[in-house]
Image (tube, rainbow, N blue to C red; front, top):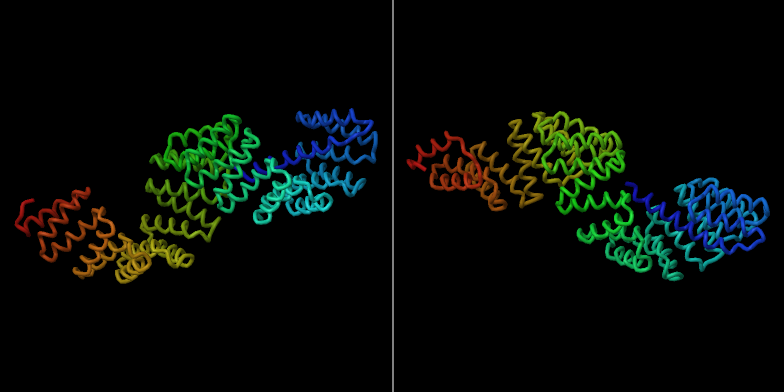
Amino acid sequence: MDYQMIGLAIAILLLAGIGIVLARRFRDPRREQNDQGLACLHDGRYDEAIEKFTKVTHLNPMEPCGYHNRGLAYERKGEYDRAVADFYRALEINPRYADAYSGRGSAFLGKRDYDHAIAEFTKALEINPRNPHGYCGRGVAYSLKGEYDQAIPDFDRAIELDPQLVIAYSFRAWCHHAEADYDSAISDCTKAIEIEPGDSFAYYRRGLAYAEKGEYDRAIADFNRVLAAQPDADDALYSRAVVYHRKGDLGLALHDYTTLIQMHPEAGVGHWGRGSILAANGKYDEAILAYSRAIEIEPRNVDLYPARGSSYFELGKYECAISDYSKAIELNPSDAAIWYARAVAYGQNGQQDQSIADLDRVLEIDPQNASAFHSRAVAYQRKGDLDLALRDFTTAIRIRPEYADAHWGQGCIYEAKGQYNEAISAYTKAIERNPGIAGVYGNRAGVYFELHDYDKAWADVHKAEALGLVLPPESRDKLREASGRNE
């Protein structure tokens, strides 16, 4: 979904609607053609409106309102260049026609030419500094540029001049949301709803803010309100799916993603979301099909390749996973997480040197990444480079002292080097940090066996088995024989 363009479309329609109201000031003997044109414009019959306003311009070529109103009709049709041309003509006749500057600003919004839009609204405000719609239009342009610190004061001024201007509250909420001020966003949306209870855009924006705050039930209620009024509101449907996903209601999320795909088969986010639900349910083959369809639609979406790669990884198809991670790295070479994912896949595929090279890259990007040191230590361990493995496990512990797996790995290296006391110390620290890792008890039991401390060995064996570890029968037999105990 292109939420920015959704907001942009609403802005253009509302600003154009403002222009229609202003245009009703037009009083002329040719009022009949003008009023018929305005009626057509209101009903969405834009071609008829253009025809009526064209007759007005023919009857009096020096009357700027005819050009202004026709510009509004072109703007509604999305023919922004023609709209701009008509607004220019209106301003040639009357250079102080503030509404024409505002209309031209709105048309530039449609063209995504935000700098020119800001300039036009500024000119309108120079002529009429008490026009709330001029401030609102300029605020919309600033917000679409991402200049929220400039947009918010314009919306503040618009609301000061017209406390009932719904669009100003809705877009100020958008700015607050972008700055992670979700409470202010919710407050503005709520005010917009008080003024206009049917304002779906305000419900939608408020739902997004509630979602960011983790208030998922409230978010869903707002999205439900939008969908009740507009069943084809794909943005609200997608957002509700995301919230269901975050809540862990995977069935409802899958239903919404599937509905979205039925409505818009080319909606890449629908296939992406569906893939993520299928993967979460362990249906990796189906997830791969969904991700592949999303990639067909959005081949430059860097996030899709690691998503599919993770499903290949879970299926043990490491070459396919590596291929997807490589494509993601090609699209975004500065993302340490993707390099890390490929390193792990290389490691599982037995390609330790390639894994180490990727982990080196991760650590160039993020030198304090404890997981990368841990994984590189594992790669060195698999290669038999015990000293380098010990160095990296130790570094991982220095960065993250509570890293149980790193203590466990350190213990394995000490055990392999015959340094049993150091191994027991490391294994014990791993258990203190995470007493639920069955394998650590198994490893420590083996070291106690080597030290002939059979009581502690048996205690660790029992704990490991209670946690689900199945020891090789020969290991138990050796411990029985050495300890003289039949357990």
